[in-house]
Length: 229
Ligand SMILES: C[S@@+](CC[C@H](N)C(=O)[O-])C[C@H]1O[C@@H](n2cnc3c(N)ncnc32)[C@H](O)[C@@H]1O
Image (cartoon, rainbow, N blue to C red; front, side, top):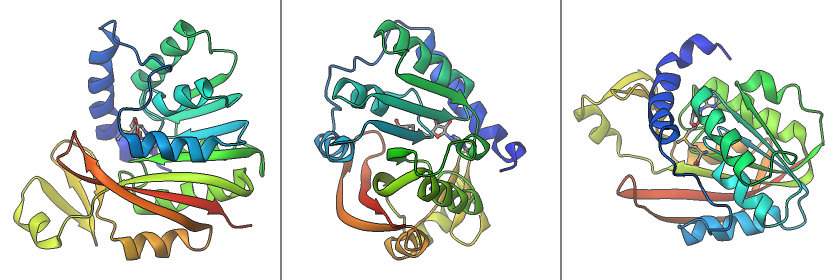
């Protein structure tokens, strides 16, 4: 992964999370995730899971909730230093810092994790917001670090009809179905078919749900996956 490709991604998230850092608002792990489908998905994911890895963990919300629900060890990786600063602060506030390991970085950090060493993984709005070749590498690494039959929960933005993207100058086409938004973020417009194609060497879909996502006024897609080994 070439970090130079992610300068505008880091800028976007650092600005967003930097604002949260300057307020007193922190996620309280006792509070269920407000979207019921995510809370349910997370409960499925961490049932019998002692360890969990979240790549693109943001401020660590899903990891804190998992620890509150009984997971013993949580590893969070994110490219935004402000996201990790916030996550570490929340961790200390909740006396969870002996159970968390938050690091700033990308795929190179996944590569340092031992094979078959993690029970569960999370990729929420990550693989459709990084370069497609990096997304494939992340899936490959998740397949390597997760145990046999280890579970993975993936959330994706909804796919948008191609003509809508072409007519909207907010989206700059970089390669087939892959765009850079005016915000500076990447968007891989992954159809269900394409998603199934890229995960099929590594994971099996055991359940799928979608639900309206309040922040974007479109739906989000949630895939429950099991590791193939
Ligand atoms: C849409 S946010 C989702 C945050 C979190 N997963 C959640 O659902 O609350 C995407 C996150 O992915 C991180 N990210 C983007 N590109 C990344 C990369 N190449 N490597 C690691 N993290 C990345 C961003 O910094 C951001 O925190």
